[in-house]
Structures are given as structure tokens and as C-alpha cells.
Length: 481
Ligand SMILES: Cc1cc2nc3c(=O)[nH]c(=O)nc-3n(C[C@H](O)[C@H](O)[C@H](O)COP(=O)(O)OP(=O)(O)OC[C@H]3O[C@@H](n4cnc5c(N)ncnc54)[C@H](O)[C@@H]3O)c2cc1C
Image (cartoon, rainbow, N blue to C red):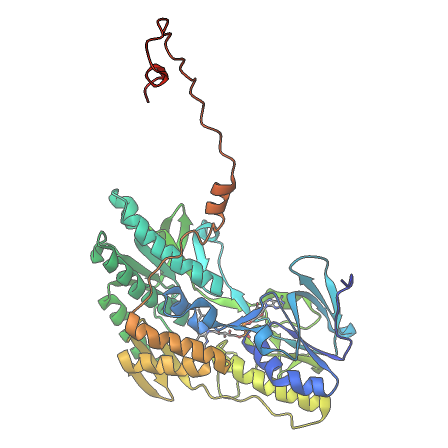
């Protein structure tokens, strides 16, 4: 076995992050670059790209977890894959430091770098949040959340203390963006289906609370649609608390404040607390020699090259949630693209073409320009809202549009097929509410079996009573059992 890490010595295009942007850039370039003597290297701590828009459906058991991720090894066969985290980039010397899951850091030399490390969950210093909450940014969180909800329902059905039962059956989501609304509506659907099968839980015992700091939800749709969504959620029994923020989450007790005057806005107990209140650019970019703008992103030009104070930086590219890309069609108030998958995929495809054109002189460098197509959201089976190229949809048509769009947008034919066939079969077998027990502690049973147990204390053997006359048989003389 080699005792040094085997790395390609070809001129390298280093892709930092194998999510939306990284996967698409690598898929577009891997073969072409290899044919020209170079290599595309993807570094990511995860061996897969996560299709994040499916996370609420994974959390609600509508999509199998493995189907919502795209394996790097299966789809990037011509690229060099490194499982690890880029911890620093020294672009002046064209070097990056990678920290593998285990072992010493590795220094990687490169010719071009694509910064595609995405975003991380943004939280605030709320007492108890880190201990009690869970985000929804990774497939692992979605799987754990589904199991936690189903486990709480099962546990509650065996509790007789009304306060403990209520706490176990209260599900809270903080954040009224797309992710938060899709999450609370999907889990409401699943929890009701699970409770119905249980028989010891009444429908009125389930409580769902959405907490949003702003005066409205879902900035991606019109105000009128957002109001419709609030009405729709309330009609399903979901409490929607606007202009409200989470102040404390200690010991399962949630304390709320009113955002207008910072006065107390009530408190309640909840075992399940899901945080979807925003994301921020991956802070790893602060460990690079690229200039960072005020929101912590690397700034690019319209061609997706990173720009410094003196203009575009040779050999440095970025796209997706980690970057501030000018939106030539409008975008955020600062004129940059909204951080979403729609932009990430299209930026990745443009970036791949531009990088190839600059590096190999084939093709043309063009500006990134994409007019937002709208938004689709699913709220559980046959429910949703959508605005597609100005056309507004609600209910079943919106839900079908949501499934149609995401079914098509899922990368690679193989994954599309798995997701869509899963949806097809669930039309016949309904939602799967099976809880995988012991997910957090899978070794429990084995540890119990493998732990030596103290031997039971041996009973002293009773001596048969004396039979001096020798008139009894041996069986008669033995003690009865
Ligand atoms: C619950 C949820 C629902 C969403 N729904 C929608 C939707 O319906 N429509 C929509 O348009 N958008 C949606 N989005 C947003 C969309 O998923 C993101 O905008 C998109 O994933 C951004 O792509 P990206 O490549 O920039 O980042 P990501 O896809 O997040 O990829 C970043 C990658 O970088 C890796 N990485 C992180 N740190 C390092 C490091 N130090 N070194 C190397 N690699 C690193 C990560 O492991 C990850 O694989 C949703 C997001 C969430 C969380």
C-alpha cells in the first residue's frame, strides 16, 4: 500500500464543494478537461450532492433519503474526488489546504479554482437553541427529523401525563421562508397520517406552530399569495405567529417575543424545534486571499470570475450561495442574485463554459443572465402554491407543478427515475410512516448483547434429608422442584 496520498499531477481545476454548483461544473468539464491533459478535482466533506428542495419531503417520508442525493463516485467518474474540507486557499500561490476526515491536512496545487462551498445555516445566540433545535440543510437532518417526529408520536401515545403528552405532540418551525413553510406543512401531513394509524392519539392533540419574525411569509411569492398560504395553513390547524421571534428554548420551553415592541409574546413547551430561519455564505471563504463583501460572500463579475479591487482575478471563479453574482435582471436590493438552486444550476453551467473558454480558448465567454422563472412549493400531498412566469397556481395544480418541476430538475436520469418512481408507488401505498427506531443509537442492541452480564447468584444445593432406614428410592430422597 502507498504511504503517500496518490494525487493527480495533471494541471488541476479545483472545485471547492460538490453541491449544486460543484456537481454541475464537474459534470460539464470532467471529460473535456481530461481529454486535454488536465484534471477536475472536487473536494467535499460529503460524497454526494444534496438536492435540498427535497429535504422537507424526505423529512415527511415522501422521498427516500438516498434518492435525494447524487453520488459523486457514480456521476463524476472522470474527476478526481477528495473527501475532505478545504480549510484555506492561497490563490497568490495557487494552493489550497484540505483537511480529510482523518489524518493530516493535504496541500493541493491548482491552476484554476471554482469556489462553490455554498451556505450554512444562520442562527442567533438564543439560549437553548443549539441544544434543542435541528436545522434542515442536510439529508441527515431530514432523516433524523422524520424519525424524531414519528418517535414522539409513538411515545406520546403511551404517556398519561397531559402536559408531557402535549409537549411531545407540539412541533415548532422557526422561519417563514420557502423551506420553513414546506417543512411545517409536509410534517403536518405526515404527523396526522401517523397519529391516525395510532388510535391512542386524537387529531386535536397535535399542535403545529410556525414562528416568523417578519410581518409576512414567503418573500418569493406575491403578498396576496403569501396571505393565501397563511389562511391555508390556519385552515389545517397550523398556528402562524407573524412578527414573532424565538427568545429562549431552554429545557424544551419556548419563550417568544413580539418583534414590534420586544414584549413577551407567550411561551409553550415543544420537543421538536426546527430552525429554518435563513442561511449565510460559507465562512470558509474568510480563510482565503479573496476579497469578501459585506454579507460575507466572494464577489464575482457577470462572467462569474471572482473580482478583486483591480478587477477579475485570473484563474478564480465562484457561483451559488457563497458568491455575490450580479443579477442583470434585478435580484436582491444590492443587485445580486437571490441564493437559490435556480441560479446555482444555471450559473454553474455558464461558469463551466466560461472557464473552459478562458483556459483552452474554445467557445466564448458570456455574461450570466437569467430571468427568474418563478417559484413552486409543495405543502404535502395535493397541496401547494406556485407562480410560474407570472401564472399563479394554488392547491393540486400547484402541487403537480412542484413535482413536475423538481422531478425534471433533479440531476441525472438515474436519480430522476428513482425519485419519480418513488412518488408513483406512494400513490398506491400512501405515505410511509414507519419509524426507524434507534437511529441515534444504532449500537444499543448489540452493546446490550455483547456486554457481559453478572451471573445469577447460585442457589445452594439442598442436601437430601437423611434416610437412615434406607427405605426411600433416590428420586424420593431428592428435594422436590
Ligand atoms: C430546505 C431547503 C429547501 C430549498 N428549496 C429550494 C427550492 O425549492 N428552490 C430553489 O431554487 N432553491 C431551494 N433551496 C436553496 C438551494 O438548495 C441552494 O440555493 C443551492 O443548494 C445552492 O447551491 P450551492 O452549490 O451554492 O451550495 P450547496 O448545494 O449547498 O453545496 C455546497 C457544497 O459545499 C460543500 N462544502 C461546504 N464546506 C466546504 C469546504 N470547506 N470544503 C469543501 N466543500 C465544502 C458542502 O458539503 C456542499 O456539498 C433550498 C434550500 C434548503 C436548505
